[in-house]
Length: 616
Image 1 (cartoon, rainbow, N blue to C red):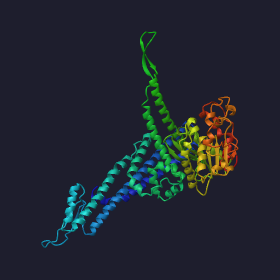
Image 2 (image 1 turned 90 degrees about the vertical axis):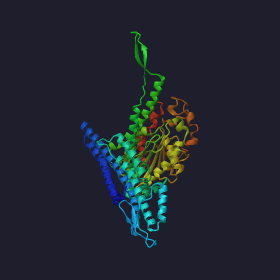
Image 3 (image 1 turned 45 degrees about the vertical axis):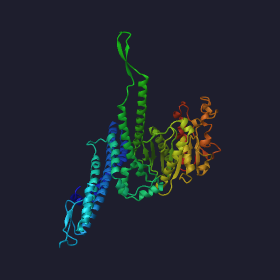
Image 4 (image 1 turned 135 degrees about the vertical axis):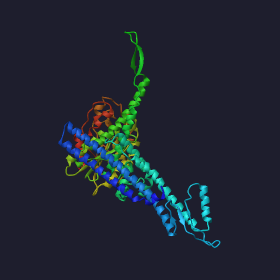
């Protein structure tokens, strides 16, 4: 970049452009929400049939376009703010050098060279003449010689002029570097010339985000950074201290971290996580498409003799090698597809929303790491009178998140029926990697729960921090291994903002008595169905014993040492509530309805009573 260009450049114009793109991003966000939360819901309520379904699909595609526009315009806005910041820094250096030069009555020429007047002691009756110098930034040896010459020049102005010329050149070099850095990044922020937002488009948004984040590093450092490992209250204070522009820019390039930042408003986290969800969904589909193209042959063609004709025929035959290769490919295909199905299940909550604000979905956490994590709230916990947080257990992962969210939905619906005068937000918290097998993971290892204690504690404290107008009536619901997560979290965080604990199908909570959960024992409730898997240990385990006598006894002999006292026992204290016995269709623990039927019948009604501040 040359001197004339940088002199004429006005960084504020780029800041103004950033504000314009930010306004477009905000309008796109509002349009997306209006379509998702109002128009589609109204159409579902008023129309049905093929035409209505087709129109609904078109509206959902339009909402995707607005969402994509929101994300990309947010990135463009941040990129322009970053470019303006870099250019402003270079321009300040240039203006300071020019101002200093003018203060000495030097002339800065259009090419950035500096002319200085005659000055100094007379030699042979003459004052040393003035001159013009250019920057000495290039070859180090030549630069050193030039600066030496300036220092020995009898005209003292030569030394100052050289300094100003070098400072001007430094500013031009910095501006050129910023221009070269940002030009390709801004050019990359361009959508395809069609009206379809594809999976690859969303995968590209993720790449664009990384590019803008890298370029805007200096600009973002100028914004007060969030506290490292901050508490929810510290996070909230940081967020409140930012301007609207700074918030928008930070969310645009850090949606993943904002989405998990406990203490921030639910609406902010939801918006950030929906972008992360869309990006992850696009990337996952691209990965699946690429994997599908690698499908190995499951059969090999073998030449065999046809006994009827005596000739050879080609027969497809499975070999151990081909079958093993295909099975390995199929396992990964199922995993990739399962992740996509889980992400679609979350998005479907937005697509199927019909406009009742008490049942509006909010995504309070999402990523596709490890087993996949998601935190979904039905209703806004920032404004709800009652907030119940459900922690699922063994076998939970992103692939099966649809059923987990459904449990939060039916509990929210039952709570609204139980207490229609107060609002209830029902949260499914899969913010940890749950054990995936009963043996040995869930049976012999508590590290899954140990690793979940801090995240769950911060999440619950964050809900309390972000809540409007006082504290909500907070209930922590742990199911299966999730009850161990809940129990350990309450045990190790005495000041946790939890009013009630519900423990269902629990193998233990990590404590021996209800009082160790640090809430009044009459606010601790537990229940286990008679035919639940966790009752299978003793040889006299009711109707299960004849089916498989003693088969699982060894799994539970030492449980009390690791998991604590059975929360439904008299020794534990607290209360129990009525649940059904549960059905017995088969032996596969993942398919044991007795372990999963707490979200129906008397059990569901009793959990809703507890979650709304009553008794079962």
